[in-house]
Length: 423
Image (cartoon, rainbow, N blue to C red):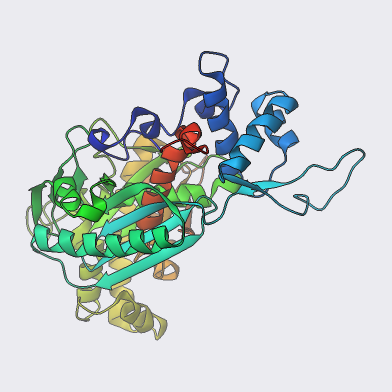
């Protein structure tokens, strides 16, 4: 993970950079702390691979000697961070001893990702292999809600998850919390979450007031950044992707991913795409021309003549029956979305935009109009056409991204998880 994705007030420096520098450049460390660096490098290679890898694969990718890799892998297996599989990665056998495929361990260590959104709360525990070990989601309307009451409710959900995992012998690496607003990564608080009606809330202080979370103070991060982290991880088989991610909810969040890493800006506040002004002096009046006012979930539902409290599936159903109001609302929203994204792409120079959240089920009705606006508005489009893709990270990606951020702390310090060590 990157230091821009969580608050350093509650994150270690190694966790904040996604592991030691050796792991960042993909080559073996040649300095003090060699074993610790190379343990991290080896574990990261196993976890980031799209499929099983062998010791020889790791040696070739990192520049470490095969004997060194073998010793490091043995330590990681002993710590239940890596497991050996029975079959070779691709079922191929060459001359000599066949390589034993390696994969992340299952059900041994979990990161707990939590989320507060406008219409739901959730907790998801994910292990090193990406398996969801526990999940709980509660729906509600949290607009203009009481932060203390909502966070207490979330803490109870997290407490149930921690108790269940601990009873099953799963070690907890920590927790992270996705929030739909500006999280101050320097001092820790949630500065503002407009659609929740929250401002300057000490989220961590409230969460750790619950005894079960006292030892698991959550890292805080913006929900769109964490969803983009999950999306980047899901796309890792194709290399280190670069894209603009847009999360469509009641509010619209965004994130910029460059070579697989989140670019979050000086304060961690970049990617607030929903607040881009796309029509400053239009019919909605000054200050009402932001992207959220045209393409947010409520705006799309109201434009289609639907109650905004209904699930987005109702809008999908209306569009599927060629309802004129639904299709018109989606075209207007897609046009605003395409204009906003063209401005972003002109600045950051990426080749793809990814539509997630509520935009994912609406993708077939948004794609063409968004593509047209990108083609019209992006100056380099004639030479490098923009791709418009749909998110592949699955449902509740911010919770997954939060859990992945926590698991990066294990990658940064696998030695702390060796037998006899206290994480």
